[in-house]
Length: 224
Image (cartoon, rainbow, N blue to C red; front, side):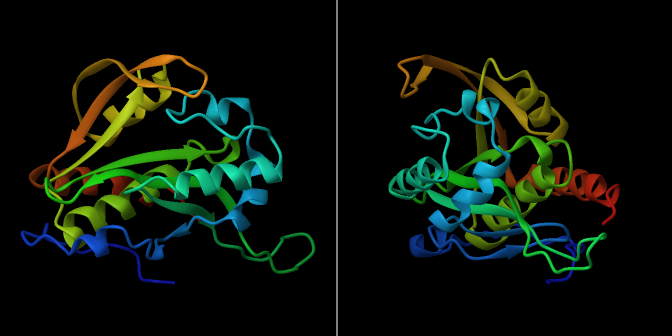
């Protein structure tokens, strides 16, 4: 496992090649690993997902709540142009009761759900299943993707679009330290026909050091 992120990387003033922006490289943190989202992750997501997991997603969820349904959902996400998806994996250890090795659990997925190389911005979207909310998965997933965006890809902006009805996600964005820019009214139409209002939050390179410090401080509060 890679060493924990500690030293402050400087945001890059050089924009990485576009092919690098769409490369789902494996990213490893203290508590989680982000690896390219594939259909093999469907069973792990299905194990912990519920109706609330997908209720407020802009692209909706699987057609049916089954391993096959989640596999088809993953295929659909991976087919969206300019989108890069990762599985959020909590690496395995050893079961305290049996002593048997565990291979790890799939907590959900996180994505560069949209990117614009010419304009140097990336959008991050997150879907975590209930057992993994409120812990280290969300802050570390955002830390890993924002770190990559600002210090490797040379992004000039990272933003997040949150369903206006999702009070928990809006509170999480404020806790992150992202700037709330406003509400895009009836901005996205879900597969069920609902036109949702999306609240836009963003972080700029000059704001990243403070946001990063806050995320690291939150992660320091967790122990394995």
